[in-house]
Length: 227
Image (cartoon, rainbow, N blue to C red; front, side):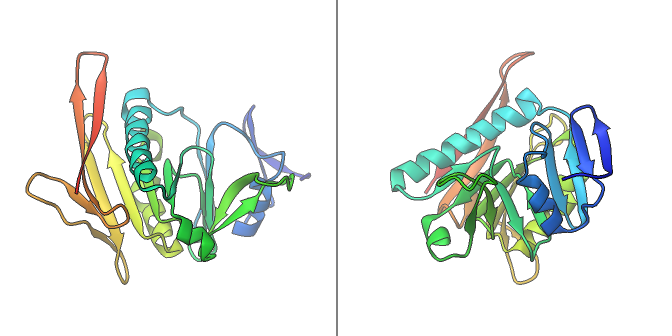
C-alpha cells in the first residue's frame, strides 16, 4: 500500500484510505500491517491498543482460562483454542478483531460456518484470519480499552453470530466474570448456581473464576470447572 498515511507513533502507520472492513482486512494481511499493538476494526472505526498487557490483571488470567479450556478440549479430543494471533472477521458484525481467547469446534470449520483465510503468502496451512463466527470468544478488560471491551465489541460479536461470549474484568476494584449466551436479539447472562458457577453451553460445564492475592506482588487465578 502507498500514499498518505496516518502516523500514530514510530511503529504504527495507518493508510489514510481505509474506511471499510474489506479495506482493513486487506491491510491486515499485508506486510505493512504493524506487529505488536492490537489493532481492531469495530463498526467502521480502527481501534488501537498501544499499552502492553498488564501482567497480573490481563496476562495471568488469560493464561489460566486458555489452559483450562485447552485441557478440556484435549480430554474430548475436539476443538482448538487460539490466543494472540488469530483474527476473527465478520461482514455481518462489521468487525475484524484479535480476541484474547478464541475457541473453534471442528464442526464449525467442517460446515463452512467459519473459514480459515490464508496468509498473504498463500503458503499451505498458514492462516491468520477466521472469516465467520467462532464458537466462543473471551475478552479481558484492560484500562486502555474499557469502553470497547464493555460496549462496542459485545455488540459487534453478537451481530457476527458468535454463540458464547465471556467478559472478564479482574482489575482490583472491578472484579467480574460473566458468561453470555446469544439470545434472539441480545446477549443473555448464563445461569448461575448458588456457588457462583456459571454455565457454558458450548463447553457443557460450570465455571467460576477465582482471584487470590498471595502477597504484595503475586496474584493467582483458578478457573474452577465442574459438570
